[in-house]
Image (tube, rainbow, N blue to C red):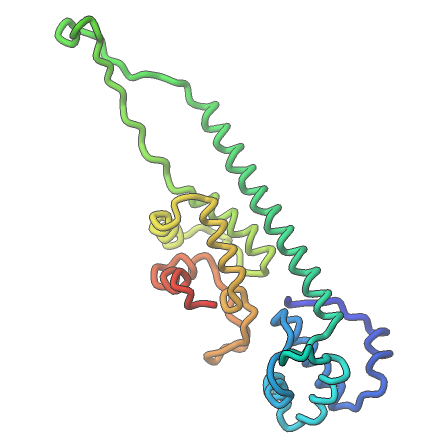
Amino acid sequence: MHYYQFNIGDYKSHTSGLSLIEDIAYRRLLDLYYLNERPFNGCSTDVAREIGMREHQEEVEYVLNKFFPSDGNGSWINKRAEEEVRAYRMKKKTAAAAGRASGKARRSKSSERAFDSVEPTINQEPITSNQLKDNVPTVRVKTPRSSPVPAQEIVNNWNDFAEINRLPKVVKITNTLRAQIRQRWNDIPSLEQWDNFFDEIGSSRFLSGKAPAGNGRTQPFRATLLWVTKETNFAKIAAGECN
């Protein structure tokens, strides 16, 4: 989660007895809890390091015990945050399902238009006596061409997915992106499989921007369609190396 509802009145009433350092620790703990969408694990010293307050481990431990009681299995849990995370995930799941349904409806409508625009014909040449055998005419039918890669539909589905998951949308289909989509179509030969591929990206903390910034970055990495369809990156995702 990259945002959450913050009630100033409730926060003030619950934290009025905290010192300045304890208040800072509480806010950092809440922010990281919502960002990672999970409880804290480990001892209070590890958690203090995780929020950049290892010099104030005592204050962090106090706040953890007061607002993030341990479940007895090594996890520090905030009840209100857990409820908000569950509600957010349910909303996200519902929106993703609606997005897939919308994509299927668009594809179905597009297929109906394409079907209605084509008149069934048989490409038959005039029959001659040499073509007759046992009074059965030989009919020559042209082999239909294979369907083109639905790059625009894939981009539309990505943009629906990206809006829900706060990832960069595709503004223009470049030649490079179109070529990469065409190459990946050999690995993912149906739009339903592309939807599953996008869901896999959404469940990755690294690809969806939920992992902390690294490698000199000031902001978490967020995958683009151009990035995930590149051959080397696609191979890493398929191998489960981008979780």
